Length: 551
Image 1 (cartoon, rainbow, N blue to C red):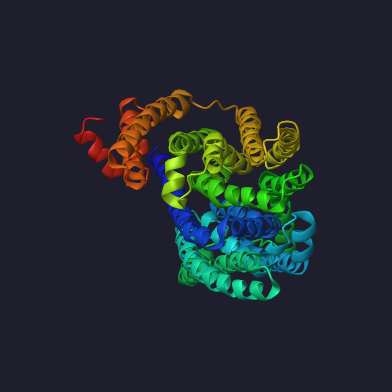
Image 2: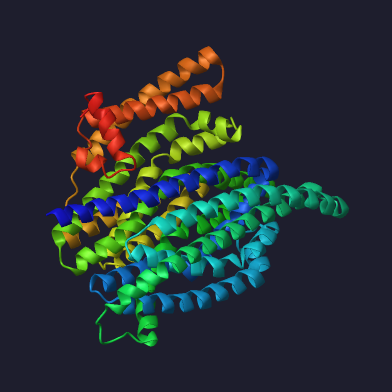
Protein backbone atom coordinates (compact mmCIF):
# COMPACT_ATOMS: atom_id res chain seq x y z
CA UNK A 1 0.00 0.00 0.00
CA UNK A 2 2.85 2.35 0.93
CA UNK A 3 4.66 1.59 -2.30
CA UNK A 4 1.50 2.23 -4.31
CA UNK A 5 1.01 5.64 -2.68
CA UNK A 6 4.67 6.46 -3.26
CA UNK A 7 4.34 5.58 -6.96
CA UNK A 8 1.22 7.70 -7.32
CA UNK A 9 2.88 10.58 -5.51
CA UNK A 10 5.96 10.34 -7.72
CA UNK A 11 3.75 10.24 -10.82
CA UNK A 12 2.04 13.49 -9.85
CA UNK A 13 5.27 15.12 -8.67
CA UNK A 14 7.04 14.32 -11.96
CA UNK A 15 4.05 15.60 -13.90
CA UNK A 16 4.03 18.74 -11.77
CA UNK A 17 7.76 19.35 -12.34
CA UNK A 18 7.34 19.25 -16.10
CA UNK A 19 4.09 21.21 -15.90
CA UNK A 20 5.71 24.01 -13.87
CA UNK A 21 8.69 24.08 -16.26
CA UNK A 22 6.29 24.25 -19.20
CA UNK A 23 4.31 27.09 -17.63
CA UNK A 24 7.49 29.07 -16.95
CA UNK A 25 8.73 28.32 -20.47
CA UNK A 26 5.44 29.42 -21.99
CA UNK A 27 5.46 32.59 -19.90
CA UNK A 28 8.99 33.35 -21.11
CA UNK A 29 7.80 32.56 -24.65
CA UNK A 30 4.87 34.92 -24.15
CA UNK A 31 7.05 37.71 -22.77
CA UNK A 32 9.58 37.67 -25.59
CA UNK A 33 6.79 37.68 -28.19
CA UNK A 34 5.74 41.10 -26.88
CA UNK A 35 8.93 42.97 -27.95
CA UNK A 36 9.22 40.71 -30.99
CA UNK A 37 5.75 41.77 -32.14
CA UNK A 38 6.58 45.44 -31.57
CA UNK A 39 9.68 44.97 -33.76
CA UNK A 40 8.22 42.99 -36.67
CA UNK A 41 4.49 43.92 -36.48
CA UNK A 42 1.44 41.86 -37.50
CA UNK A 43 2.76 41.02 -40.97
CA UNK A 44 6.15 40.06 -39.55
CA UNK A 45 4.27 37.85 -37.09
CA UNK A 46 2.59 36.23 -40.09
CA UNK A 47 5.99 35.44 -41.66
CA UNK A 48 7.34 34.19 -38.34
CA UNK A 49 4.22 32.15 -37.53
CA UNK A 50 4.03 30.64 -41.02
CA UNK A 51 7.66 29.49 -40.86
CA UNK A 52 7.06 28.03 -37.40
CA UNK A 53 3.95 26.15 -38.59
CA UNK A 54 5.86 24.50 -41.44
CA UNK A 55 8.80 23.79 -39.13
CA UNK A 56 6.45 22.25 -36.55
CA UNK A 57 4.96 19.83 -39.09
CA UNK A 58 8.39 18.62 -40.21
CA UNK A 59 9.41 18.43 -36.56
CA UNK A 60 6.37 16.24 -35.85
CA UNK A 61 7.22 13.93 -38.72
CA UNK A 62 10.95 13.71 -38.03
CA UNK A 63 11.25 13.65 -34.26
CA UNK A 64 8.25 14.73 -32.16
CA UNK A 65 7.13 11.14 -31.59
CA UNK A 66 10.63 10.02 -30.55
CA UNK A 67 10.58 11.22 -26.90
CA UNK A 68 7.24 9.52 -26.28
CA UNK A 69 8.33 6.30 -27.99
CA UNK A 70 11.73 6.22 -26.25
CA UNK A 71 10.23 6.92 -22.80
CA UNK A 72 7.66 4.16 -23.33
CA UNK A 73 10.22 1.57 -24.50
CA UNK A 74 12.83 2.48 -21.87
CA UNK A 75 10.33 2.46 -18.98
CA UNK A 76 8.97 -1.00 -19.86
CA UNK A 77 12.49 -2.50 -20.03
CA UNK A 78 13.63 -0.90 -16.79
CA UNK A 79 10.47 -2.22 -15.11
CA UNK A 80 11.74 -5.70 -16.05
CA UNK A 81 15.30 -4.92 -14.88
CA UNK A 82 16.66 -4.90 -18.44
CA UNK A 83 19.06 -1.96 -18.08
CA UNK A 84 21.31 -3.05 -20.94
CA UNK A 85 18.42 -3.29 -23.38
CA UNK A 86 17.16 0.10 -22.19
CA UNK A 87 20.55 1.62 -23.03
CA UNK A 88 20.58 -0.08 -26.43
CA UNK A 89 17.15 1.43 -27.11
CA UNK A 90 18.65 4.82 -26.31
CA UNK A 91 21.65 4.38 -28.64
CA UNK A 92 19.46 3.05 -31.45
CA UNK A 93 17.08 5.99 -31.06
CA UNK A 94 19.97 8.49 -31.30
CA UNK A 95 20.99 7.00 -34.67
CA UNK A 96 17.35 7.05 -35.76
CA UNK A 97 17.05 10.72 -34.73
CA UNK A 98 20.19 11.78 -36.58
CA UNK A 99 18.95 10.17 -39.80
CA UNK A 100 15.36 11.47 -39.62
CA UNK A 101 16.41 14.92 -38.39
CA UNK A 102 18.99 15.37 -41.15
CA UNK A 103 16.52 14.33 -43.87
CA UNK A 104 13.91 16.76 -42.51
CA UNK A 105 16.49 19.57 -42.37
CA UNK A 106 17.43 19.07 -46.01
CA UNK A 107 13.77 18.99 -47.11
CA UNK A 108 13.03 22.26 -45.29
CA UNK A 109 16.14 24.07 -46.49
CA UNK A 110 15.87 23.17 -50.17
CA UNK A 111 12.06 23.18 -50.29
CA UNK A 112 11.49 26.43 -48.37
CA UNK A 113 10.86 28.55 -51.45
CA UNK A 114 8.34 26.15 -53.00
CA UNK A 115 6.43 25.51 -49.74
CA UNK A 116 6.10 29.17 -48.75
CA UNK A 117 5.18 30.39 -52.24
CA UNK A 118 2.80 27.74 -53.56
CA UNK A 119 1.36 25.98 -50.50
CA UNK A 120 0.93 28.66 -47.82
CA UNK A 121 1.03 31.74 -50.09
CA UNK A 122 3.54 33.60 -47.92
CA UNK A 123 6.71 33.84 -50.07
CA UNK A 124 8.71 36.10 -47.76
CA UNK A 125 8.51 33.61 -44.87
CA UNK A 126 11.14 31.67 -46.84
CA UNK A 127 14.02 33.40 -45.02
CA UNK A 128 12.72 32.44 -41.56
CA UNK A 129 12.09 28.85 -42.69
CA UNK A 130 15.58 28.41 -44.12
CA UNK A 131 17.07 29.54 -40.81
CA UNK A 132 15.03 26.90 -38.97
CA UNK A 133 16.17 23.98 -41.14
CA UNK A 134 19.25 22.83 -39.10
CA UNK A 135 17.21 23.02 -35.89
CA UNK A 136 15.27 19.90 -36.91
CA UNK A 137 18.33 17.68 -36.52
CA UNK A 138 19.25 19.27 -33.18
CA UNK A 139 15.75 18.87 -31.75
CA UNK A 140 15.54 15.24 -32.89
CA UNK A 141 18.59 14.28 -30.80
CA UNK A 142 17.42 16.49 -27.93
CA UNK A 143 14.05 14.70 -27.93
CA UNK A 144 15.62 11.26 -27.65
CA UNK A 145 17.69 12.24 -24.61
CA UNK A 146 14.66 13.84 -22.94
CA UNK A 147 12.62 10.71 -23.68
CA UNK A 148 15.36 8.53 -22.19
CA UNK A 149 15.28 10.41 -18.89
CA UNK A 150 11.47 10.44 -18.86
CA UNK A 151 11.53 6.67 -19.31
CA UNK A 152 13.86 6.52 -16.30
CA UNK A 153 11.14 8.24 -14.29
CA UNK A 154 12.68 11.70 -13.96
CA UNK A 155 11.39 14.85 -15.64
CA UNK A 156 14.08 17.14 -14.20
CA UNK A 157 16.47 17.05 -17.22
CA UNK A 158 13.56 17.81 -19.55
CA UNK A 159 12.40 20.64 -17.28
CA UNK A 160 15.86 22.23 -16.91
CA UNK A 161 16.64 22.00 -20.61
CA UNK A 162 13.22 23.42 -21.47
CA UNK A 163 13.79 26.45 -19.28
CA UNK A 164 17.29 27.00 -20.66
CA UNK A 165 15.97 26.64 -24.21
CA UNK A 166 13.34 29.32 -23.72
CA UNK A 167 15.64 31.80 -21.98
CA UNK A 168 18.24 31.62 -24.76
CA UNK A 169 15.49 31.63 -27.39
CA UNK A 170 13.93 34.80 -25.91
CA UNK A 171 17.18 36.76 -25.66
CA UNK A 172 18.56 35.80 -29.07
CA UNK A 173 15.19 36.14 -30.88
CA UNK A 174 14.59 39.73 -29.79
CA UNK A 175 18.18 40.92 -30.25
CA UNK A 176 18.76 39.32 -33.66
CA UNK A 177 15.27 40.24 -34.90
CA UNK A 178 16.02 43.91 -34.16
CA UNK A 179 19.41 43.78 -35.93
CA UNK A 180 18.06 41.97 -39.01
CA UNK A 181 14.98 44.20 -39.16
CA UNK A 182 17.29 47.20 -39.55
CA UNK A 183 19.26 45.34 -42.21
CA UNK A 184 16.02 44.45 -44.00
CA UNK A 185 15.03 48.12 -44.02
CA UNK A 186 18.23 48.99 -45.87
CA UNK A 187 17.88 46.15 -48.37
CA UNK A 188 14.21 47.00 -48.89
CA UNK A 189 15.04 50.66 -49.47
CA UNK A 190 17.34 49.64 -52.33
CA UNK A 191 14.67 47.28 -53.76
CA UNK A 192 11.86 49.82 -53.26
CA UNK A 193 9.92 47.99 -50.52
CA UNK A 194 11.61 48.69 -47.17
CA UNK A 195 8.87 47.59 -44.73
CA UNK A 196 8.18 44.18 -46.33
CA UNK A 197 11.82 43.11 -46.37
CA UNK A 198 12.36 44.47 -42.87
CA UNK A 199 9.50 42.32 -41.56
CA UNK A 200 10.77 39.25 -43.44
CA UNK A 201 14.35 39.67 -42.17
CA UNK A 202 13.09 40.42 -38.66
CA UNK A 203 11.05 37.20 -38.68
CA UNK A 204 14.21 35.35 -39.77
CA UNK A 205 16.03 36.87 -36.81
CA UNK A 206 13.28 35.60 -34.52
CA UNK A 207 13.73 32.03 -35.76
CA UNK A 208 17.50 32.20 -35.12
CA UNK A 209 16.53 32.34 -31.44
CA UNK A 210 14.68 29.02 -31.82
CA UNK A 211 17.83 27.40 -33.19
CA UNK A 212 20.07 28.91 -30.49
CA UNK A 213 17.66 27.76 -27.76
CA UNK A 214 17.60 24.19 -29.09
CA UNK A 215 21.41 24.03 -29.17
CA UNK A 216 21.59 25.36 -25.59
CA UNK A 217 19.05 22.76 -24.41
CA UNK A 218 21.02 19.99 -26.11
CA UNK A 219 24.19 21.09 -24.29
CA UNK A 220 22.30 20.96 -20.96
CA UNK A 221 20.92 17.43 -21.44
CA UNK A 222 24.28 16.14 -22.73
CA UNK A 223 25.95 17.48 -19.59
CA UNK A 224 23.32 15.80 -17.36
CA UNK A 225 23.71 12.58 -19.35
CA UNK A 226 27.48 12.72 -18.81
CA UNK A 227 26.94 13.07 -15.04
CA UNK A 228 24.34 10.29 -14.98
CA UNK A 229 26.29 7.79 -17.13
CA UNK A 230 28.37 6.18 -14.32
CA UNK A 231 25.21 5.48 -12.29
CA UNK A 232 23.53 3.87 -15.26
CA UNK A 233 26.59 1.71 -15.88
CA UNK A 234 26.45 0.47 -12.27
CA UNK A 235 22.84 -0.57 -12.73
CA UNK A 236 23.69 -2.25 -16.05
CA UNK A 237 26.38 -4.37 -14.33
CA UNK A 238 23.70 -5.84 -12.07
CA UNK A 239 21.54 -6.68 -15.10
CA UNK A 240 21.47 -10.47 -15.66
CA UNK A 241 19.55 -10.26 -18.93
CA UNK A 242 20.99 -12.96 -21.19
CA UNK A 243 19.43 -11.91 -24.49
CA UNK A 244 20.30 -8.43 -25.72
CA UNK A 245 18.09 -6.89 -28.37
CA UNK A 246 19.77 -6.42 -31.73
CA UNK A 247 19.82 -2.97 -33.29
CA UNK A 248 17.75 -4.26 -36.21
CA UNK A 249 15.10 -5.33 -33.69
CA UNK A 250 15.37 -1.98 -31.91
CA UNK A 251 14.88 -0.05 -35.17
CA UNK A 252 11.86 -2.22 -35.95
CA UNK A 253 10.37 -1.75 -32.46
CA UNK A 254 11.04 2.00 -32.61
CA UNK A 255 9.38 2.21 -36.01
CA UNK A 256 6.23 0.31 -35.06
CA UNK A 257 6.01 2.31 -31.82
CA UNK A 258 6.64 5.64 -33.53
CA UNK A 259 4.27 5.23 -36.48
CA UNK A 260 0.99 5.23 -34.48
CA UNK A 261 2.25 8.06 -32.25
CA UNK A 262 3.53 9.90 -35.32
CA UNK A 263 0.25 9.56 -37.18
CA UNK A 264 -1.72 10.60 -34.12
CA UNK A 265 0.39 13.65 -33.26
CA UNK A 266 0.78 14.69 -36.91
CA UNK A 267 -2.93 14.51 -37.67
CA UNK A 268 -3.73 16.10 -34.31
CA UNK A 269 -1.30 18.99 -34.83
CA UNK A 270 -1.48 19.41 -38.60
CA UNK A 271 -4.75 21.30 -38.21
CA UNK A 272 -2.94 24.61 -37.77
CA UNK A 273 -0.89 24.09 -40.93
CA UNK A 274 -3.98 23.14 -42.92
CA UNK A 275 -5.87 26.08 -41.42
CA UNK A 276 -3.10 28.37 -42.65
CA UNK A 277 -3.35 27.09 -46.23
CA UNK A 278 -7.17 26.85 -46.34
CA UNK A 279 -7.69 30.26 -44.71
CA UNK A 280 -5.36 32.13 -47.06
CA UNK A 281 -6.57 30.33 -50.18
CA UNK A 282 -10.26 30.97 -49.42
CA UNK A 283 -9.62 34.54 -48.22
CA UNK A 284 -7.82 35.26 -51.51
CA UNK A 285 -10.74 33.81 -53.50
CA UNK A 286 -13.19 35.91 -51.47
CA UNK A 287 -11.38 39.06 -52.54
CA UNK A 288 -9.42 39.88 -49.38
CA UNK A 289 -6.12 41.64 -50.08
CA UNK A 290 -2.92 39.73 -49.22
CA UNK A 291 -1.97 42.42 -46.72
CA UNK A 292 -5.32 42.07 -44.92
CA UNK A 293 -5.35 38.31 -44.47
CA UNK A 294 -1.66 38.38 -43.62
CA UNK A 295 -2.42 40.79 -40.75
CA UNK A 296 -5.32 38.64 -39.55
CA UNK A 297 -3.16 35.54 -39.49
CA UNK A 298 -0.37 37.48 -37.79
CA UNK A 299 -2.76 38.43 -34.96
CA UNK A 300 -4.01 34.85 -34.74
CA UNK A 301 -0.56 33.25 -34.37
CA UNK A 302 1.18 36.18 -32.68
CA UNK A 303 -1.38 36.99 -29.98
CA UNK A 304 -4.29 34.54 -29.77
CA UNK A 305 -2.34 31.27 -30.07
CA UNK A 306 0.52 32.51 -27.90
CA UNK A 307 -1.91 33.19 -25.02
CA UNK A 308 -4.07 30.10 -25.50
CA UNK A 309 -1.05 27.78 -25.58
CA UNK A 310 0.22 28.79 -22.12
CA UNK A 311 -2.33 26.74 -20.13
CA UNK A 312 -2.47 23.99 -22.79
CA UNK A 313 1.26 23.40 -22.17
CA UNK A 314 0.34 21.95 -18.76
CA UNK A 315 -1.71 19.21 -20.42
CA UNK A 316 1.18 18.37 -22.76
CA UNK A 317 3.51 18.04 -19.76
CA UNK A 318 1.16 15.82 -17.75
CA UNK A 319 0.54 13.74 -20.87
CA UNK A 320 4.31 13.26 -21.38
CA UNK A 321 4.79 12.24 -17.75
CA UNK A 322 1.78 9.90 -17.73
CA UNK A 323 2.80 7.69 -20.66
CA UNK A 324 5.83 5.94 -19.03
CA UNK A 325 4.05 5.37 -15.71
CA UNK A 326 0.84 4.21 -17.39
CA UNK A 327 2.84 1.88 -19.66
CA UNK A 328 4.61 0.38 -16.63
CA UNK A 329 1.35 -0.14 -14.69
CA UNK A 330 -0.41 -1.49 -17.79
CA UNK A 331 2.46 -3.91 -18.53
CA UNK A 332 2.18 -5.17 -14.92
CA UNK A 333 -1.59 -5.63 -15.48
CA UNK A 334 -2.28 -3.41 -12.46
CA UNK A 335 -5.52 -1.98 -13.81
CA UNK A 336 -6.47 -0.41 -10.48
CA UNK A 337 -3.30 1.70 -10.56
CA UNK A 338 -3.84 2.57 -14.24
CA UNK A 339 -7.32 3.89 -13.45
CA UNK A 340 -6.04 5.90 -10.47
CA UNK A 341 -3.36 7.54 -12.61
CA UNK A 342 -5.92 8.38 -15.29
CA UNK A 343 -8.25 9.86 -12.67
CA UNK A 344 -5.53 11.96 -11.01
CA UNK A 345 -4.16 13.31 -14.29
CA UNK A 346 -7.58 14.30 -15.67
CA UNK A 347 -8.55 16.00 -12.39
CA UNK A 348 -5.20 17.83 -12.24
CA UNK A 349 -5.72 19.15 -15.78
CA UNK A 350 -9.33 20.24 -15.28
CA UNK A 351 -8.59 22.06 -12.02
CA UNK A 352 -6.16 24.25 -13.98
CA UNK A 353 -7.73 24.45 -17.47
CA UNK A 354 -11.27 25.42 -16.46
CA UNK A 355 -10.36 28.61 -14.51
CA UNK A 356 -7.80 29.53 -17.20
CA UNK A 357 -10.55 29.37 -19.85
CA UNK A 358 -12.90 31.51 -17.74
CA UNK A 359 -10.17 34.02 -16.93
CA UNK A 360 -9.04 34.34 -20.55
CA UNK A 361 -12.63 34.91 -21.66
CA UNK A 362 -13.48 37.51 -19.01
CA UNK A 363 -10.19 39.43 -19.23
CA UNK A 364 -9.56 39.04 -22.97
CA UNK A 365 -9.19 42.74 -23.79
CA UNK A 366 -7.39 43.77 -20.56
CA UNK A 367 -4.80 40.99 -21.01
CA UNK A 368 -4.23 41.91 -24.66
CA UNK A 369 -3.81 45.58 -23.72
CA UNK A 370 -1.44 44.68 -20.88
CA UNK A 371 0.80 42.40 -22.93
CA UNK A 372 0.53 43.60 -26.51
CA UNK A 373 -0.84 47.15 -26.07
CA UNK A 374 -3.64 45.98 -28.36
CA UNK A 375 -7.20 47.16 -27.76
CA UNK A 376 -8.57 46.13 -31.17
CA UNK A 377 -11.83 44.19 -31.36
CA UNK A 378 -10.43 41.41 -33.59
CA UNK A 379 -8.01 39.77 -31.09
CA UNK A 380 -10.45 40.36 -28.21
CA UNK A 381 -13.24 38.49 -30.00
CA UNK A 382 -10.83 35.68 -30.91
CA UNK A 383 -9.95 35.23 -27.24
CA UNK A 384 -13.59 35.28 -26.11
CA UNK A 385 -14.65 32.76 -28.76
CA UNK A 386 -11.67 30.44 -28.33
CA UNK A 387 -11.30 30.46 -24.54
CA UNK A 388 -13.32 27.24 -24.13
CA UNK A 389 -10.86 25.45 -26.43
CA UNK A 390 -8.31 25.65 -23.57
CA UNK A 391 -10.41 23.03 -21.73
CA UNK A 392 -10.99 20.93 -24.85
CA UNK A 393 -7.37 20.96 -26.04
CA UNK A 394 -6.06 20.22 -22.54
CA UNK A 395 -8.34 17.22 -22.14
CA UNK A 396 -7.87 15.88 -25.67
CA UNK A 397 -4.06 16.20 -25.44
CA UNK A 398 -4.05 14.29 -22.17
CA UNK A 399 -6.45 11.64 -23.46
CA UNK A 400 -4.13 11.06 -26.45
CA UNK A 401 -1.30 10.30 -24.00
CA UNK A 402 -3.53 8.02 -21.91
CA UNK A 403 -4.53 5.92 -24.92
CA UNK A 404 -0.92 5.69 -26.06
CA UNK A 405 0.12 4.64 -22.55
CA UNK A 406 -2.31 1.70 -22.57
CA UNK A 407 -1.11 0.49 -25.99
CA UNK A 408 -4.14 1.80 -27.91
CA UNK A 409 -1.98 4.00 -30.08
CA UNK A 410 -4.06 3.49 -33.21
CA UNK A 411 -7.19 4.90 -31.55
CA UNK A 412 -6.05 8.59 -31.36
CA UNK A 413 -4.94 8.24 -35.01
CA UNK A 414 -8.42 7.14 -36.09
CA UNK A 415 -10.14 9.75 -33.93
CA UNK A 416 -7.86 12.55 -35.15
CA UNK A 417 -8.36 11.56 -38.81
CA UNK A 418 -12.16 11.59 -38.45
CA UNK A 419 -12.13 14.90 -36.59
CA UNK A 420 -9.66 16.52 -39.00
CA UNK A 421 -11.90 15.67 -41.96
CA UNK A 422 -14.91 17.21 -40.21
CA UNK A 423 -12.80 20.19 -39.06
CA UNK A 424 -11.80 21.17 -42.60
CA UNK A 425 -15.45 20.93 -43.67
CA UNK A 426 -16.54 23.17 -40.78
CA UNK A 427 -13.81 25.71 -41.58
CA UNK A 428 -14.75 25.87 -45.26
CA UNK A 429 -18.47 26.26 -44.45
CA UNK A 430 -17.83 29.00 -41.90
CA UNK A 431 -15.61 30.91 -44.33
CA UNK A 432 -17.65 30.42 -47.49
CA UNK A 433 -21.14 30.35 -46.04
CA UNK A 434 -20.89 32.89 -43.22
CA UNK A 435 -17.82 34.90 -44.28
CA UNK A 436 -16.35 34.72 -40.77
CA UNK A 437 -12.75 35.14 -42.03
CA UNK A 438 -10.27 34.52 -39.17
CA UNK A 439 -13.08 33.86 -36.66
CA UNK A 440 -13.89 30.75 -38.70
CA UNK A 441 -10.45 29.35 -37.84
CA UNK A 442 -11.07 29.90 -34.11
CA UNK A 443 -14.53 28.28 -34.23
CA UNK A 444 -13.26 25.33 -36.32
CA UNK A 445 -10.39 24.67 -33.88
CA UNK A 446 -12.80 24.74 -30.95
CA UNK A 447 -14.92 22.16 -32.79
CA UNK A 448 -11.85 20.01 -33.48
CA UNK A 449 -10.66 19.92 -29.87
CA UNK A 450 -14.17 19.30 -28.53
CA UNK A 451 -14.76 16.42 -30.93
CA UNK A 452 -11.42 14.84 -29.97
CA UNK A 453 -12.46 14.98 -26.29
CA UNK A 454 -15.67 13.11 -27.05
CA UNK A 455 -14.09 10.39 -29.22
CA UNK A 456 -11.06 9.84 -26.95
CA UNK A 457 -13.29 9.81 -23.86
CA UNK A 458 -15.48 7.10 -25.41
CA UNK A 459 -12.36 5.05 -26.22
CA UNK A 460 -10.93 5.33 -22.69
CA UNK A 461 -14.29 4.26 -21.25
CA UNK A 462 -14.40 1.29 -23.63
CA UNK A 463 -10.86 -0.04 -23.24
CA UNK A 464 -10.36 0.60 -19.52
CA UNK A 465 -14.00 0.18 -18.50
CA UNK A 466 -13.39 3.45 -16.78
CA UNK A 467 -15.77 6.21 -15.78
CA UNK A 468 -14.34 9.56 -14.71
CA UNK A 469 -15.53 10.98 -11.41
CA UNK A 470 -17.67 14.01 -12.35
CA UNK A 471 -18.31 16.11 -9.23
CA UNK A 472 -14.74 16.96 -8.13
CA UNK A 473 -13.27 16.83 -11.65
CA UNK A 474 -15.72 19.01 -13.60
CA UNK A 475 -18.62 20.40 -11.56
CA UNK A 476 -16.81 21.87 -8.54
CA UNK A 477 -14.01 23.47 -10.65
CA UNK A 478 -16.68 24.90 -13.01
CA UNK A 479 -18.74 26.38 -10.16
CA UNK A 480 -15.61 27.80 -8.54
CA UNK A 481 -14.42 29.22 -11.87
CA UNK A 482 -17.83 30.79 -12.62
CA UNK A 483 -17.84 32.61 -9.26
CA UNK A 484 -14.20 33.57 -9.87
CA UNK A 485 -15.16 35.00 -13.28
CA UNK A 486 -17.81 37.21 -11.69
CA UNK A 487 -15.36 38.42 -9.04
CA UNK A 488 -12.67 39.14 -11.63
CA UNK A 489 -15.12 41.08 -13.82
CA UNK A 490 -16.32 43.17 -10.89
CA UNK A 491 -12.85 43.91 -9.50
CA UNK A 492 -11.46 44.84 -12.90
CA UNK A 493 -14.23 47.27 -13.77
CA UNK A 494 -14.16 48.82 -10.31
CA UNK A 495 -10.40 49.40 -10.47
CA UNK A 496 -10.31 50.56 -14.10
CA UNK A 497 -12.99 53.16 -13.28
CA UNK A 498 -11.14 54.36 -10.18
CA UNK A 499 -7.46 54.09 -11.12
CA UNK A 500 -7.78 54.38 -14.93
CA UNK A 501 -4.67 52.16 -15.15
CA UNK A 502 -5.20 48.90 -17.07
CA UNK A 503 -2.07 47.17 -15.71
CA UNK A 504 -3.11 47.73 -12.09
CA UNK A 505 -6.72 46.66 -12.71
CA UNK A 506 -5.74 43.55 -14.70
CA UNK A 507 -3.04 42.25 -12.35
CA UNK A 508 -5.11 42.94 -9.24
CA UNK A 509 -8.20 41.21 -10.70
CA UNK A 510 -6.11 38.16 -11.67
CA UNK A 511 -4.73 37.92 -8.12
CA UNK A 512 -8.25 38.20 -6.68
CA UNK A 513 -9.43 35.55 -9.14
CA UNK A 514 -6.71 33.09 -8.10
CA UNK A 515 -7.58 33.56 -4.42
CA UNK A 516 -11.35 33.26 -4.95
CA UNK A 517 -10.98 30.14 -7.10
CA UNK A 518 -8.56 28.47 -4.69
CA UNK A 519 -10.71 29.22 -1.61
CA UNK A 520 -13.90 27.93 -3.27
CA UNK A 521 -12.15 24.82 -4.57
CA UNK A 522 -11.04 23.95 -1.03
CA UNK A 523 -14.35 24.87 0.65
CA UNK A 524 -16.30 22.73 -1.83
CA UNK A 525 -13.84 19.85 -1.31
CA UNK A 526 -12.68 19.87 -4.91
CA UNK A 527 -9.19 18.92 -3.70
CA UNK A 528 -8.22 16.62 -0.88
CA UNK A 529 -5.18 17.13 1.31
CA UNK A 530 -3.24 14.14 -0.06
CA UNK A 531 -3.82 15.35 -3.63
CA UNK A 532 -2.85 18.93 -2.85
CA UNK A 533 0.42 17.85 -1.21
CA UNK A 534 1.52 16.37 -4.54
CA UNK A 535 1.15 19.74 -6.31
CA UNK A 536 4.08 22.19 -6.55
CA UNK A 537 4.45 23.83 -3.09
CA UNK A 538 1.51 21.66 -2.00
CA UNK A 539 2.65 21.27 1.62
CA UNK A 540 2.91 25.05 2.03
CA UNK A 541 -0.57 25.53 0.53
CA UNK A 542 -1.97 22.87 2.92
CA UNK A 543 -0.45 24.65 5.95
CA UNK A 544 -1.90 28.00 4.86
CA UNK A 545 -5.31 26.44 4.11
CA UNK A 546 -5.45 24.84 7.55
CA UNK A 547 -4.54 28.10 9.29
CA UNK A 548 -7.39 29.76 7.38
CA UNK A 549 -9.71 26.84 8.26
CA UNK A 550 -10.26 26.01 4.61
CA UNK A 551 -9.28 22.36 5.14
